[in-house]
Image (cartoon, rainbow, N blue to C red; front, side, top):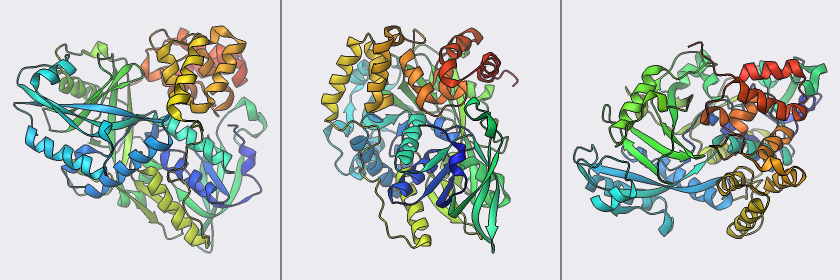
Length: 532
């Protein structure tokens, strides 16, 4: 994956996709596979906003059954099963526990009915994915860190998990391989119109990249027959966008690991909302919140009251309470939802729709990571109809770009064996394979040339130096925080100080073509913002 801003010049594209999150990536990938000439531009890094600030789940949305949003749940469950099949390295099963207490808002019978409906809507997902009931002793034994006062038993059910930022990155890689031009740090500054119809855009290079010094801050006119805006929260910045959608802020905290490899779906005592405790890279994700948002789109921060809310709700369930000093990291993101008159943000629909402005530009509104592929297919259907192109969607049940061609189980065993032969610890090997799929062989080659690169970057987390070097050399990272927030999420999973950042920056400086001054700027950019 190489960044080339100049590839946008002097070309007429069938489709210009603006916004490099999950919807933009799926749209560009789908359109390129159908034979369209495609440009995908992103003003920041790939998955730089909402698409790297999710709960990291590929799921049907069990909680949407309460609002009887059965169509969305069924669509999402079908996509979940498809992704588990075609991207086993990228999407893997994850079981959830749901405790039932004497004062639970949803009792055993109601929960049993909901989980049975969930399994039914998944259309026979297999014995490993259906729900199970446990009595109080069995459930307490399965989750011994939960409080047992009033516990009546519980259930487990299955959904799936991913690394959201790497999911987007792999789709961008697939779009590139299919012939699309994909450029991050490329800001759209103006839409070009002819006879009242959008026919292109002016874009500016905002990379400040040493790879492309002569064109840094240069501009190009990108001509395109069709334009799709998948910029998420920035759509709501315009008066037209505000009439279409609303923003909902979600916060997650990174907490110490719990003694389980299963997640928990819990209900907040204060307001009845659903939240999760989820194992991720050896830590625990706690979240999320739901709150209307109208603040700065470029500076979405975690507030002290949001931290307090999540800790208080988690501590209603935990035997050993989490304190504020236990918070390792945090992140906030904005969900875009269709405009709703409902009082509570959590009650608004997560479903998706496509809007078309008077100038012919299309806007993607709402949606979920899980169902983004199908929604993107509808976007490209609309584009093809406008272009008079008869080409069917090619992404359904298509093997992912980095998925191994061989039987996945056998391939995983072989890759794990090779990793351990090279000195990679078992936990790091598991996550390395999930992160890179068949590209893990490139990581192995780095270690063969430098055995020390099999060591962990931070002792407590399953990331190794060879992985970092591969990301720096071939994943279109421009800045240090691209590497340490989205290529591998060290910045949210560890409390890193300036010395840690400088040590890592020196390791990748050659690959990133950084001189000493640039390295210093990158370290400063990656340091935590303490202004709030």
